[in-house]
Length: 334
Ligand code: UT7
Picture 1: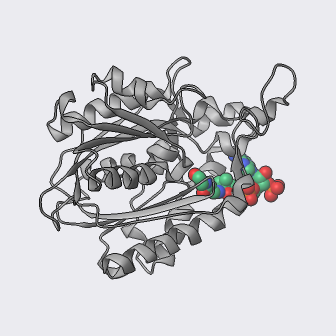
Picture 2: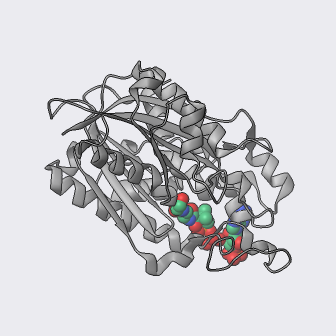
Picture 3: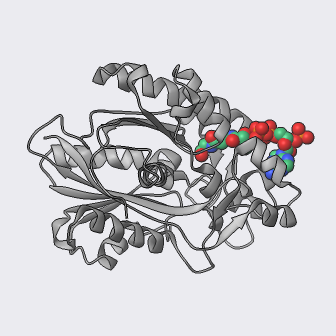
């Protein structure tokens, strides 16, 4: 059964954190952050606000955008690197807070590829006849896992959430349909992006773990090169599978990791740089929330128009990568 995106909602916490504010705290400058990453500002939650809180807001808005009530949803899939707790998953709490009833609700852990992994899984769940409509959410509070003495990661990541409603449809080839997916991973490079402690490999008990092992860590330069080739190759495999020429892609919505990565990715795909949708300047790298936030930004600004060809691709820790493509539907993001 074909599946179609019928609603899109986003939520950003109100607190803006500028490069200047970070320059006061870290050995960095607005000039370094802007030229090396393209980021000018990002949002961070206040203490006590969780990923689940952001996910609930984005989910509520996606339902409104789709014109649905809570009774219409059969499952919630939440992609996040920053769950509210190591156990249980965050999605059941989000489903309960949204009043969705006793439906299937589970988390997906694929770091910055998480949203597209979640979309692919929801697509499969509907295609298998296990659900009619799935709320797919990407939500993160990276500000809670950043190492306050690591200027490289602290300047890059932001908090936020985005959600879509994915629904089974009667006919294929209509706007909003998920036209195909490409998913992949390379666990031999797991050390490039990780939080060392807190899991079963390096358990956390008081006094036994160096502080820095409790925080998010990334080998930025190595990740940079992996990001372009894996997103690019994944996107090319997907385009081959669905029969789109590269040149026919109207908008390249890549994971907002770094503006230099997005421009390199466009070049890798032989696309003009201006086909790359960019909102990292205002939100930073929001990991699993990145793709829906970029989609909503481009749709609200009028850049994405119904009927346009949209190619989405993401890359993140694991390593993982994922791509999908849709014809942009006539929806209004909330
Ligand atoms: O979302 C998941 C996937 N993530 C990504 O795809 C991120 C990929 N990586 C990147 O975006 C970039 O590698 C970074 C933005 C993380 C870093 O940029 P870079 O151009 O690769 O810098 P670098 O790590 O190679 O560091 C270059 C220099 C170093 O100084 P030395 O050793 O050359 O003296 C760093 O210490 O820049 C220094 N540096 C900084 N300087 C000022 C690193 N962070 C900062 C900073 N401010 N915030």
